[in-house]
Image (cartoon, rainbow, N blue to C red):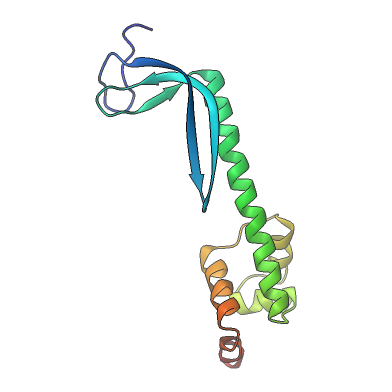
Amino acid sequence: MPNRSCSNCGARPMKPFKREAFSIPHAGGAETIKGLSGWRCGMCRGVEFDAASARRYALAGDRLVLRARELERAEIRRIRRKLGLSQAAAARLTGGGHNAFSRYERGEAVPLPAVVNLFKLLDKHPSLLKELLVS
């Protein structure tokens, strides 16, 4: 398309590019996808991929998210066990339903960031658990 306009800022024309590498950062990790093609805006530097490249970019992003969720599930399980909590007790502690931690650890539900942060804090300061269980 010789006169393609940028969907971000409306500038035209966009310049085609071929076989470039793009890095997707997510949750402390990153994945680089090589050989992507599409168009780049000369004004805002926005990028639009062709259909095949957009699919490859999206799949790489999905892999990163799934990998991060798996690591989070394993971390929650490790910390819960370190603290000597059953799944039911961990759910009561965080205000979740009786099966919440079972669902988190099986990957059927994603814990709220507050739950993840609480368990990371308790991992570093396990003595705080006593204070939480008393109240």
